[in-house]
Image (cartoon, rainbow, N blue to C red; front, side, top):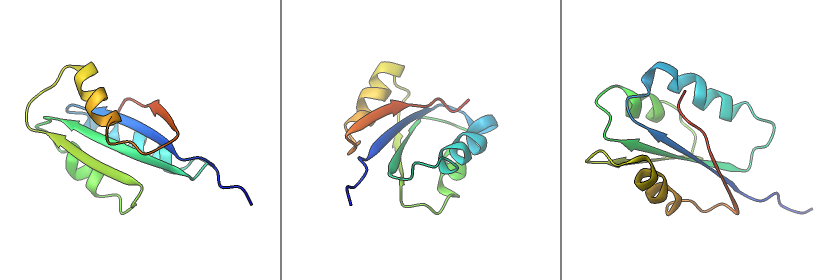
Length: 93
């Protein structure tokens, strides 16, 4: 049986707690299960990291920046952490 390719989902987050729970739940409800979520916290000062950590799912990889990065910098940093054959982006909202 052929293994389905890994899909890396890049989620850049800066103070995204308002919609974050729904966003992560939407990923987990997909029928395609061979994915990893690269959650990149971009210097949030809200509960974003705690919300991401509340999911006990080893497919969710959490990374944080100590300083705020421009979106392209944050995405490029997160892409370097990805291991998937395919990469997609999902905003927190």
